[in-house]
Image (cartoon, rainbow, N blue to C red; front, side, top):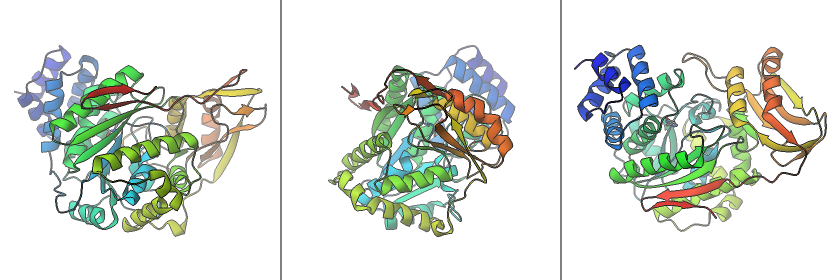
Amino acid sequence: MNPLEVIGRKRDGREHTPEEIQFLLAGYVRGEVPDYQMAAWLMAVCIRGMSPAETLALTQAMVMSGEVLDLSAIPGIKVDKHSTGGVGDKVTLVAGPLAAACGVKVPKLSGRALAHTGGTLDKLESVPGLTVELDPERFAKQVREIGIAVAAQSPRIVPADKLLYALRDVTATVPSIPLIASSVMSKKIAAGADAIVLDVKFGRGAFMPDLTSAEELAAEMVKLGEGAGRHTVALVTAMDNPLGRTVGNALEVQEALDALSGRGDEELLEVCLRVTREMCELAGVHADAQKVLRSGAGREKFEAMLAAQGGHLERGLPMAAVQVAVKADRDGYVGAIDALEIGLSGADIGVGRIRKEDKIDPAAGFVVEAQVGARVSKGEPLVVVHARSRELVDGVTPRVRAAWHIVDHEVRRPPHVLARVDKSGVTRAD
Ligand code: URA
């Protein structure tokens, strides 16, 4: 067997054996299969797809590329949470600490910005001093003592995904159900949690274009999770507009702190509370998530987690040197905010990466002033762009302004959580 044969089989639309998948992946992790061959295979997978058996084999090969954490020493049912990625998606930063404050143990391995979507690790690293590189012992200790840890997959845990994730990010090979399902579920299985809540996003700013494909991805992931003995539930949520009031790294950490202090955007709180309730349910924890939120215990838990990971919030979050409002060019109502355009503009000002080696600007991002449904007059601010330089702001301003669709009629914010998927199937919201 050689890599060219395996790539060629997928190019021609044939089904891989588990051995072929294992061969290619193990070779890539060892550095014997170069990036360009792996990228060619990834593109073939994007175009040709994979059968459920191939997706399972890929997930298992990814899990086997590293260690599987044993969290059995931590008492109770451990529940992990993962999103398939969105724009302004800070749900982990709110629902994770909130669930931990309710009494759930939350061991979470997260990712970095991917394509136009933000990354929880990049957001957390905007806190001065904070590390997301926790070795498995420190990770388990923090979950035991504080109830939550959010870390990068260390080289010891799913090394294959760490490499593939970075490669997919820069080769336009992210939006593929088998690649997303295996990437997410290999990390979830290796992180050692007993149960998993997934937030599967669809729409302009997500990798899944519509509700049906998001449900398909959710069902695939639930099957992989349940097959590995982990109770898995997925919520399918809309990602046409950016979630909440900010898009960025430090900006989203601040928004999460505000939301945990009870000053959250309605839609953001809705999805965070739903995710928290699902996490509590899977853990067998009877807590009133809303009450815990109001008590401020979620915020305390978040601060304790940041401090345990070396973060110094008291030093202040980084702030952009330049902050410029983009204003409405007509009167009307905000009908939609194109999350994809905002995500792509974000990459241009340093919220995410365009090349693998690009540096994130922790202070860069957007603060939404006019949400979907808001009435605006010509000249009023729609959004404030935070960036390192005026040049960067000017570069994205036309695109950002065009992302705000202003219409003449009144607009209601659309429903956010549209379906729930578990092992017995899909339930659509009314
Ligand atoms: N999140 C992941 O962890 N992997 C993907 O492929 C997409 C979103």
